[in-house]
Image (cartoon, rainbow, N blue to C red; front, side):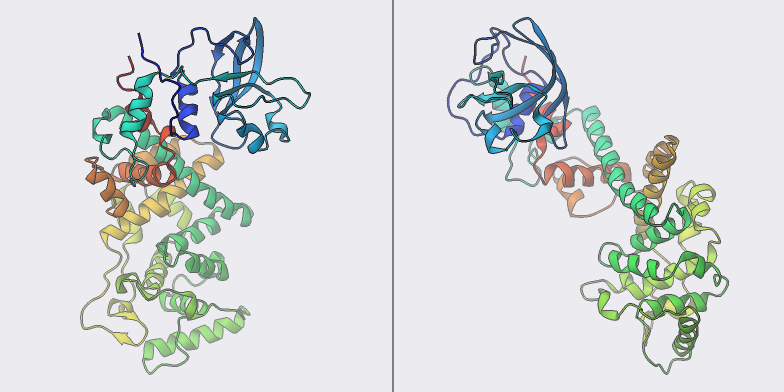
Length: 440
């Protein structure tokens, strides 16, 4: 016989009770409401991760009467009033209130008593012990000391789910740009390329620069790389007011001409860009020069990443383009280097661009046109790309969970940000597996 958790005071989060209800980890013998009505659970319901009741579309039988609706879970029955559910129409269809302790009767808006079941004294003891032993909420990875014990198939499934959620988040940003651009995929792809080239530190500034110079405008001058640089650096506010260097002077002169031609009267300023704390190889000046070279060599950016490029090597040809001669020996204007500072973007940066630029565009495109094959292409390409190396990945590696490629590492980043950091462990299959273990 399974041992049950007693009536002693226990410290736990509300999501523990949600887990208990979701997987029915409690003794259902003599399962009754606080009012003595017999309860039979036919359908637990779908766990709702958004606003509204915790479980949707549930089915229960109370004293022989079939009830269809939602289930709300609380630690204490009084939390119903504390959370102001009584005045929220979304909770009018709740058919069962599941609580640890029924400390206060709850009534519907029509004055009838809400059917309430109390789980105190009914939860399986092993579930509580595993929950208490395996999850350390003070740790960055609450299941740090036990994650290596989880079967590979469960860990893979967890990473796949976290990866899809991460791609959905990024695709939402792209689809937001697409809406702003009135359905123009070329312009949207161009803007997302700039944002991706900002690499977090300068992502916002890069996005603003792309908006200031429409893609169609740059395409008119794509056969003249110096002119592209003049326009981009000028609108970025990174050109000096004057220079003794012939090339820089040429850029200044060209920009002044096109600034008047296109009536650009509000360029960015240098203070909008981050140089401090940024490695010289990631200076915005060098990144903009690399962007200019890529745009000069790609007559159609969208088709280049959607149709012309399908694997890692083809993206190398598209993105690993050498910048102009000036930027091969400069990190910024007027500051030359004795050594070659840039032969184009490195393999590491190329991998990051595939992960952060190409893959999200593919995923968003597939979502927009409801073509699921693009999701599979994302997964296939991510398995060709090496895993990232950053502080998040190191946390998983220290727990003996090593990524084999970018599919794994992107899943780990999504898992950490959306589950580990906010401590949503009980919504994670890894933690669920650890808690379920040894219940029988």
